[in-house]
Image 1 (spheres, rainbow, N blue to C red):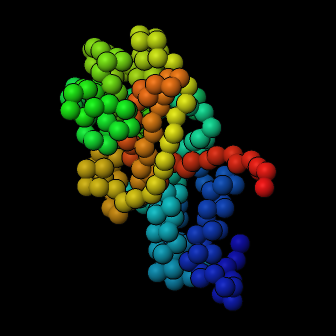
Image 2 (spheres, rainbow, N blue to C red):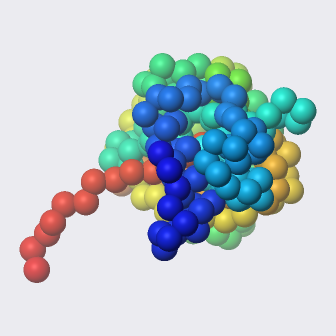
Length: 245
């Protein structure tokens, strides 16, 4: 495909779109090396600066990644997470054929912050919560940092479980009879903090998707979770249906 200097889009955008179309078409497979800046410059008749800009745009979008001294490679496709179903991280990863894993970053019982207390309908001065913070991985790749808060009264001794391997939602249902029925979730884009950059193995500046979710069992709020998902590996999709008016 030839680039068109007379077209309204800059050449580096045209080159980016061309390369991403070739990836979608299967011309380049995941983890396959892309042509170098010099090779792209010769193939498409553009400057190396234009080729570099195109590759930088693709890296910013999470379509490719670089390895020092080895070149630029095609990234795995973004995880397409639908927002219609109430599922946990482990269930989502297994449904895609992946291998979920967790690393516990923090786990304790204590008094909630005012914000957490309001979400869980607790008294911040007397009602204790369980805090469980985990780094969530799929096939060894860190994808998210999740910090969950749960009322201690609903699930005493919860932290006796091994949450490096066990699913929190499965434990809540099987051991405590808490069948999660609905959740309210908000998502916003932000730049990763220094700690998120380190834990998620990101190169700054890097985007994350910050999520807050309050989950109920019937009319009882069971879990309030704050998460940061890698923006280069996730996209969220929902189906909107037309209503009256």
